[in-house]
Length: 166
Image (tube, rainbow, N blue to C red):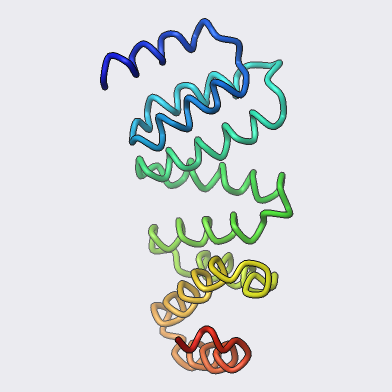
């Protein structure tokens, strides 16, 4: 870690636990300093007077760090919390959960989350995310040897959404 980042991490302990700390942890995470970012996120989460917005952002940032560090169970717990806390973002968190279970080769749980995200009209509301969900769901069905269901899903959605044909 460069001297500048070491200084920022040490200096953060003297700052108030505000949006600036969330932002600093996010920047560390973006640059691949996941363990360092997690320390700051944990400080924010342990601070009793941190506001709800900062805590939610700290949980989300922690989930990303855990995922990048291969700590999938911790990431799953964080995304499960966020899915319940932010129902308007539920399809996104369900997709993240599906992806984590996919990486863990737990295709039944991955299927559950991808199917739930797809059933929430994600293709209408967020085309880019919907395509990711659709692609993973078909892949999960194939890995579960549910070929007929995968084909039916492909046929149904490609007929309904022409952009999936491309």
